[in-house]
Image (tube, rainbow, N blue to C red; front, top):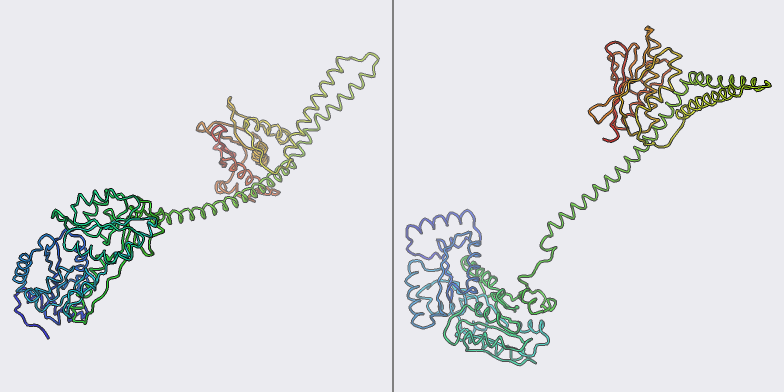
Length: 624
């Protein structure tokens, strides 16, 4: 049944919007507006001031969970009772009157009490502050709740702190420990913790000598902890205030003690981690806040609720384990470690995976490139062998074409040798032979023999077959001179005048000398044949070399024939292109392949005065 109450204008608008939202999205969390007719109000009651991290963590977690569950359709209020600094009854009564008047027009629908003191307060002053509110609590154990004799309609998320489990954790890490020191403050809550420890540790500390440090000043706590025997175990419970009446946040008090302690320090709260405690068995305040928030959500939705138990967990500080030389392997299973240095893999696994993937990809690419390179080299080797075979065939064809001229040229020194031998023989038959004349005849025989030998050597060069390129560095002009000597007889027979124009300096190139000689012979024999078919009686073959751009050498071979049809200039180097009835069409194609093999370029053109000119360019040896 909807509770009737006076709603101010602002609440009327909010209530209307909430009702409209509920009609559109009837979820469990937001259906409370349908029950109470407006946005629900939740009061979070803290026992101490806002500086105490334990209760603050629990309350903030509960606040975040409520906002998430109701999609923000909730009014949240927070009150800090500050009972550790003001425990007097007059303050408590004054606070109750203040809250009763403060919330008179906005009575809470649910009250979340954090801790035992806040729970006791709201139970006692419920009628004054939130007479119709449902009350849920967290922050203390079921045993303590039973002692308080809470009403049947008050439910909680019980937090059972088992100090014996914290001691068990310490003994696993320090199996050789002989003494146990327990530290607790002077506030009522501190004293209750000491009483619980005396009861729970009576049987759990078997074999350990127990010593309690209580009701001391903070400086005395620090001094006592600094003088405990090395290898002992120190349990710090809570210090909300010391003997002098000074108030503390427990984690700050522990931090001062742990900083000077001569042995590892343990404690029952997760907030101690990062402030000097090695670890302990605890209920995290975040899980406590989440659990009590779930009870509040169920209460808002009008669902039946029941008390729950917040799960316990072990926590540890990896830095303190390292500080005291305690083995990580001895931690209880499932321990949550804070400040643990991540391994290289944990810190940079995305980058490592990326690098490994990149390296793997690179390896695949490199492997592919190496395979491709091997294939290419094989193909290049195969192509080179085919080229060498073609060059050899072309050389043989050239030698065959020049055979008549070569035979004619060879017959001259051989005929001269025979004639000289006959003359010498006749002179020697005389009674008084002319020895000087015989010596002259022998010198002529020797010269003619050298001429014949040179002709045969050049012919052997044309006919020799090789399986690889013979890289050499040589003067291009020398190769031209050698080619002219080979062509001499052929040119003379066909009445072609051969001339050469060469610079004074050497023109060194790097290639196979025989291959370049073959190119020159191919171009020159084609030029001679072109002039034989021409009508002109003036037949001239000109070899000319020159430097180009100071890094290249160019050779031109020009004739006075009929030239090349302009539309065929780009086709003369294609395979099987020929204008000769008995030609193969491979000579110029092979010439281009040879020149390009050595980094050059070859082309053809027509001379303005008539005839054709073939040119090729090669890099100078010192530049390439």
